[in-house]
Image (cartoon, rainbow, N blue to C red; front, side):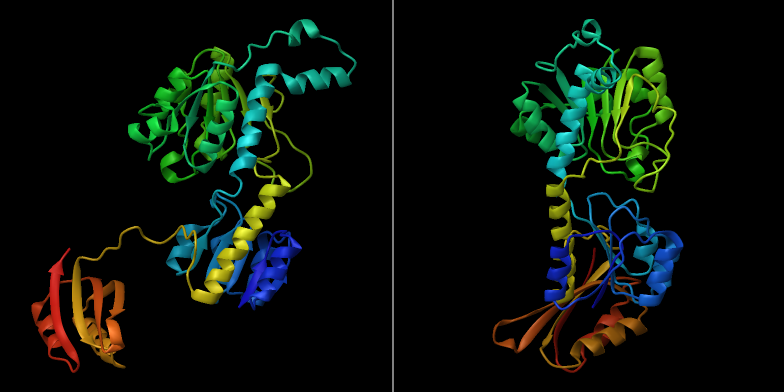
Length: 400
């Protein structure tokens, strides 16, 4: 199995993949047309990326591509829709950067409260202004609102408790009972979190249903002078609404992600919020600790290893949670060569499109049972034809 590494991963990862029997082509820094060309030339079975964008052109350039591993939690840099249409698995590495992002989140909160970056800049420029910088409010006893309570949100919660902060939260999967177990105040919506918190921090994945989750209504609900933290993705924030909240109600923001972020590691940079004294921008470094990067790299290697040795894809993000199957055909049969091939042939003749299939074998290996879920008009005559095939023991057909 050929694996193309299009971003920098540690030598230990390459050694691990080599030991697993993979042929590794290490070309860190591939982007745009260079990536497309490399995929076309090498035609690997596996592509591993960090921040590199993987487009439809890239996916179509390598007909042998079977798996894309995003060495990180988010995967919005991969054209997942096209990958799904081409039958290419997409996997990520969730939870491995949680501590690093949580650490940055807390650092940004303290930076806003104590104006740490401005302190340092003034000191470097020979300006002494203890009268200004000695007026911090402090975060003890303040209410931190978490929007999203996945791995990162829960890591932030741990650290906030250590700083004696009150925590409220909303998440699509967070129930009142689970909130009580975690010791956080449950809220029914992101807007409710924004309304009741002194500090709001976003920790949701970037998906169509979270696009501009922090919108005008969200910022209108925030308290005057509240803090807003975003270490997830720029797409979840309406930056125009954020700017209005900064200008109109004194909201202060710390953003590790924002629109039009440079795609290069170093270079010129400009953004309308960069010079705003109520905003701190960092360089999308939430997961950028040595600990997090190595953990993510090893998880990426584990995903590739698993696929290479067993065909399983840990952390796959583009398998349907539920298929379009309308009926289930259950076939008990003798465990012999060709039995299921004959069953599937009859299903093809009946124009039944198989969506899910499982075959389990009884003790001693003489008989088995196949559960076949399909989409199509359930003509009972087709089931009757299957029932009389050679080596078939029993057939049942049910509507789902």
